Length: 269
Length: 269
Image (cartoon, rainbow over all chains, first blue to last red; front, top):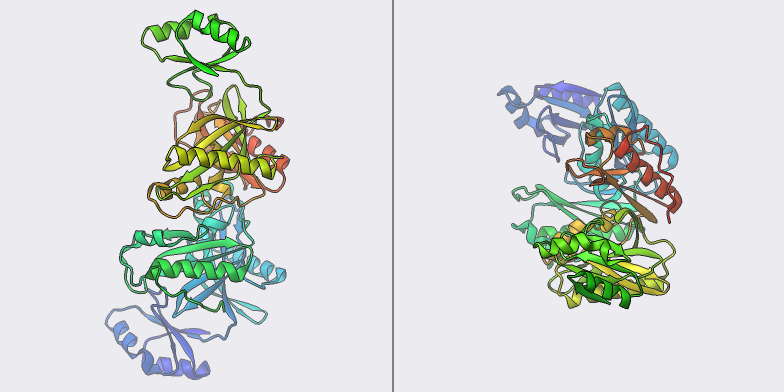
């Protein structure tokens, strides 16, 4: 359930219909947690409603959905119709920003994998997509709920650069040029991509000297460093998911904060 | 055994000392079979001797060596001394030009692998190499004979782009910047690189549409196409060496001559 909302009473009414909790989003400029708020009271978005009246982005309210984890799948389609998907990944969000991606999604059943691929490929076909499309989903018990579409190579597919036969970027070029699509198989049992958000470091290339893990593939985007901004990522591939996860997160922490940074002992889930 | 030679009698004398067979090389401009001749008579290089007298490249004669196959190993070294080698590969030459590379070299024993790595790393260390060095060797029974050194990323290491954790090009940059070197492990059981020599095609990018094998990674160098010139390569990775070899050679043939080209059913050895 979702509705456009433009007044406090619109929001209150939606909250009443949706059980007291809603996700309000701006119709433009939403990414990395920006333009998204979970609200239980219309006053929570009073500022956005005022902005919208002043010519700012219009607003929509969505029913809040309970889910177990977030998944994503990349699919590529070329004009002549050929379509290929990469394995389904788990996307771990912190403060609304993708923090890590685990490929493939741990403990995802072959049946669920088939369902997710079917959903993603159906969307790409029905929307007549050319290129790479990222389909983000919520896993809620046995249900897969499509949460967001990104019509391009996407953060949740960066692992393919280092750990798939064909990366999402090569595939996007193949697709838009209507060339045969490349093999989307993974080249490792597991790969983990950890984003590097802007932190204490200001000269990112120096960080490369401190990442001594020879299997950590560090990608820097050449962006100005601002706190919390995605400025790079690290991918590690290997056999054991816990080990690979730890190595990726530690390398990303070193790039962000230097070798003295305490490794971020995050739980995977 | 080798000597500089500048006259017909120099060459005859060398042939007598070397058992009637020698390899004569020009001291400059030698690559892909150019500037190398196997000779049994001084007259075989009469033209080169005349060139040398007219200011052309000077000549050297080397003892001809019997060998079983050609191998190569890439080694990277950074100024602070860290050194890493990739697995030893087999290099298959046709008419003096590298045709295919199989990584790792089939049937190469762990002991021979250790010997080859030790030789390559010793050379890199003694020569104080910074960057990637390719060491080409002849395998002659139990002996490994160093044949040629290339002080750079090299054709025999192109397979690392698609089938090693760290490619020779990334590693070369890491080494010259004195950054920690990357993991040199292969990401597949076997990879085969097949060179694309200039052939019937004149517009290489069109060839991409004809390579329908999604696992064939096609690399085109943007060079003018001339017969026999290396203008690109194809790498295929997988589990079975015969299958991977066939796929790589077939894809390279399609890039060279188009989809109607009869697959080149070459023997691996």
